Amino acid sequence: MMALESDNIKVVHINAGDEEGADITLEYNARRITISFFASPLCSSPGSPVENRIIHLLNNAVIAADEDYEELINEVLDVILPAGETFFSEAAPPGRQKPCATRDLHSLLYPESLDFRLQTIDGKATMFRISPDEGVALPDTPPEPRLDTVFQPNDQLTCYSAKDISVHDIFVCGNGIVGRVHIDGRDMLCKARRAGLWDVGLERELVTLQSIQEAIARTNITIRAPSLHGYIIHAHSGAVIGLLRQWVPPSSYGKSLRDVNVSVVPLNIRHKWADQVRQTVANLHSIGIIWGDGKPSNIIVDESDDIELIDFAGGWSQGWVDEPLAETMEGDNQAVGRIVQFLGI
Image 1 (cartoon, one colour):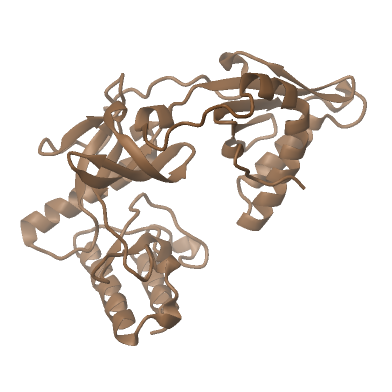
Image 2 (cartoon, rainbow, N blue to C red; image 1 turned 180 degrees about the horizontal axis):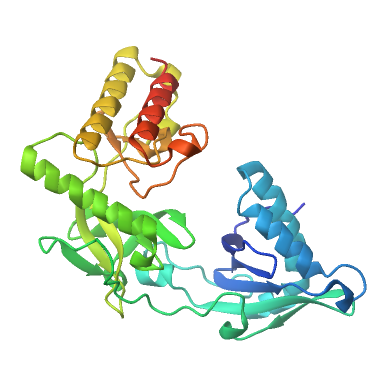
């Protein structure tokens, strides 16, 4: 089977969820290519239309576990790449110069993309170019400033245009970017979403981080979470599309508890981590804030071997919080108990 990713081909984003259509975006020889699939009537061509099978595979891929996801995407690529090889290689020839390691955030969030469609014609999977407005997804338009939101920027914090932010390391990409950036002479972590505040997770995290900082300033309560340093705005519309928070250099044990080999961590340090998690969540609850997606990967460890909680965008993760308790204090407490068990305490 074809590899999920290679040096020249990467799956960037999947847009799926219904039986009428889907699309997949690839980075092919350093160029973004989006392929759309529209469902065809079963009687429209001999045999089962290939696009229907791909829509089904992509719908399954977006909800699949990691090991199943790779198998499903490989099956999709095994159809797409042979059908589109000639077109793709002309648009993005092999050996095309790759983008430099440091790129501005705006270009990474809103890259130029070539649009194609795959359709079964005379029983054969056929690839052809289309215009952006002929694809499954609507063409990108800049997110407009959102007025009907509880989030209000703190005028003591700076707004930075995404065009002026250079990204040095990317940890998550797709419909958003999480990465390390360098601004005003210091490293920061950026979290930006293409949809801006229309993404409810970004809105929730901004509101939560601001509430934490206000509570700390007002009461001197200790809450172990990185500080909010600024906002990211769209280079053209000026809409808030992300946040900049404190960069936390990692511990020698690993970046997050998920990365830590718990068996080699001294018992006294693991007890300290368990106590810090318990106390931080209790303090969050005392000011009316819910952590949400409590799990080891959302607990980072700093150079002093102290922990900080991250990701206040909401949600829940199987195995750490039961779905009926998602985004409740009871769910947070359940996650804390399971994290303490994970630490071997």
